[in-house]
Image 1 (cartoon, one colour):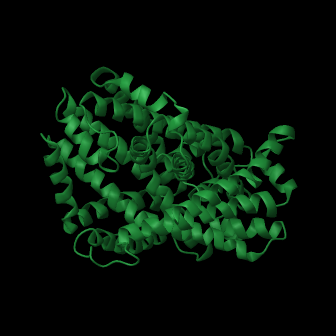
Image 2: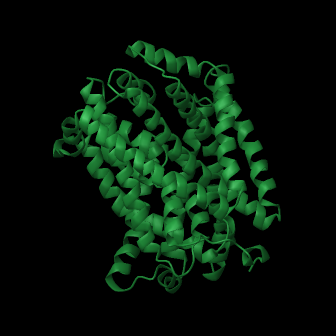
Length: 448
């Protein structure tokens, strides 16, 4: 047992762990990506397959990742090594922890840039920013993309906010920040949904998302929904494993995972209803893709009573979601530095900030000044996204499913998960067969 592990922090209670794990899962993928993917993938067919995928693929894998973290009781690399050693597995399994940690930092380098756009639009909303036409909304966003100095400034601000929380510690930093932001996020989301019901076309939004038609289900829709279910829970990045390592032995992994999945899914559905109710009310295009939040919605907010106030609330909601997720991306590597290299948390956190900040500056420049510098046709932004979301995360998730399902001793898995009989057998069978198959299909589809 590593000496540093003896004095490791633990969450103050099970609900604290639930909040921080929800915070990790509820990010831009739920507030931003879920609505625009729903729009671009035809609506209700995508939603239905997504919900089934969350239940049959996301939940079993979430349980497995938390299980490894708590069983190993350390950062992702240490947790994988310890659990592998306990079951007689190879030390090569430690590479899964490394892939998750490095992948998380690579993701954070461009995630921080995108979150910086949200900070920019929040500041605009606070100053009464309005756009009268779709062309004006598009021009405003393009002006931000063409300004590397402005993007770098907001990237710096957001990354500093994120690392500042992690540097304060597990309980006094990460836990307290999530205890403040997550209730605020849910409150704002409920207010926006109620406002969408009053000021938007909630009926059209509801039918678009939940009127299921069999003919709309295509192989591409299925694979897109399965892939998003995997990514929306922050799986395969080491974050959930790191958070799970701070969970006490008395808490039920299954019950906490159910809460996380339910809350994350609810956030995505409510965000979709709120966004699409306004989109349909103003005759805008639900298939606007990634521009749905930063181009379509500002136009909608500018043409409705009270739009200025709710524009502020909306971008504050997205900022909270991005912030809590970004915090979880920093923690795995900081935990490794403090536990394995005996570096003080504050030094580890700000050292990580520097590395991610420098890479993030390159991401900002890749969208304008360095746009012509490409590898395999991808700029740095797109290349990092492709490497992490289409290669590293799926392979890490696949390895986690295989490791828990086929390498760890069944007795150790049963002891940690605290399930018995048919419930355990059902989860175990799904993890060993359906989850690896689904991830493999998504992986090969993404490489086409």
